[in-house]
Length: 160
Image (cartoon, rainbow, N blue to C red; front, side, top):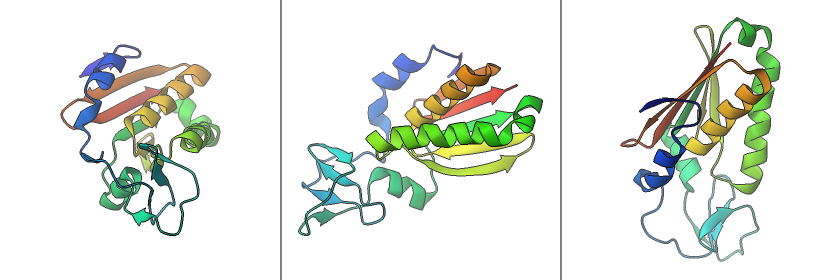
């Protein structure tokens, strides 16, 4: 689905359950991710201390990172981007830090150079959206979202 900024949110909410990396059964509580240390407790993953007898399982974010299977792609391009690359990438990292503090499953997987800019991959569609919206709010430009319901995949393109 291709839409301009703003029209895709309802689609994302309705079909959130299609993510194969979300657990289909409830994990025993508490469960600790051996890679990142996030703890599944109270029905969600959070940053807290797990007791020594906690179960262990990879959280969905670490599972995606291991599989190298992003849920979000944010492509940032253009002459303005090239001139302000460091500050725009810093803004993306700040959005990740802000979201990750409350939501352990929202992480940047990588930032790679692509022709004319960079591509940021994320473990969650919401973080990809947040990064695109933050860059657009700060620097204007053209922002586009493409959400694929079947794959629970969001592609965000920003250029200026």
